Image (cartoon, rainbow, N blue to C red; front, side, top):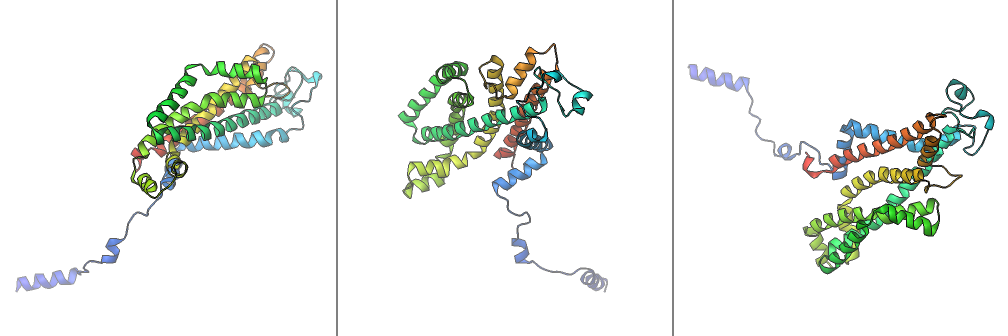
Amino acid sequence: MSDLLKKNAVEDDFKIVGKDLIESEKISKPSMSFWSDVVRRIKTNKVAVVSFWIIVFLMLMAIAGPFLSKYNYREQNLGNQFLFGSKAFSLGHYFGTDDFGRDLFTRVWSGARVSLMIALVVVAIQGTFGAFYGGVAGYFGGKIDTLMMRFVEIIMAVPSLIYIILLMVVMGPGIKTIIIAVAVTEWTSMALIVRGEVLRLKEQEYVMAAVNLGASPVRIITKHLVPNAMGQIIVRLTMDIPRVIFTEAFLSFLGIGVPAPFASLGSLALDGWRLLSNGPYLFVIPAFFISLITLAFNLLGDGLRDALDPKLRK
């Protein structure tokens, strides 16, 4: 009797629902592509997000900043030399004026535009050529790879500053010369990175399938190998941008950078260094923006490297 009561109690308290095969086959976590996962992980990295928005702000100001002032970056006013502080601000010189009375606010953002333009063009050139060169060397391997890598080692054996100075002497100073000179010396590191990735990727099944289907080497390199190495390429390009900006600033500081009347952050820092005793702000402000751009791109590059690392994917 007691056993029967227990059985009835169990049947009343519990209901056997059985297995729902349709529900059990559903995936509880939605599928996510590689790049969607990268974006998600970047958003969780607060330092990288802040760095990204700092870069966006600096780029927008480099474009629109000079138009926010009523002064032209070339306009001189010898009656307003070395103005700084409240008096300069009341006259619309938000960063003060230099030894010729020129508005430093306009000159800083015009200089940032030139520096960022040089960096972006150089990175685009070296990224494109370096990725293709490294892709060809890694894909074909053998004697072709050995010959191409020996050429890279010869270029890397000579300090890049020597190449840059020689090109400056031959072509003359100018923005175009700086772009060509820096791009010629900076593509080798990209080639080495892409070559290493291609050597690893070319043994994958999808590459072998493309070969068996009759795809040409150029198509395999450009459509399969280089795109799959894009994570490492993006990280490297992000790290190269501040290095190019620093190189341009260094050349300007040596007096062989952007020629007058154009200004870059490096040339502004050089002018400020010469006038350090008259107005320290003339050096501090351009140096601050060079440091801020360099730091922001480096921190963003660190965040991208962590987000693109397949070992950290969950």
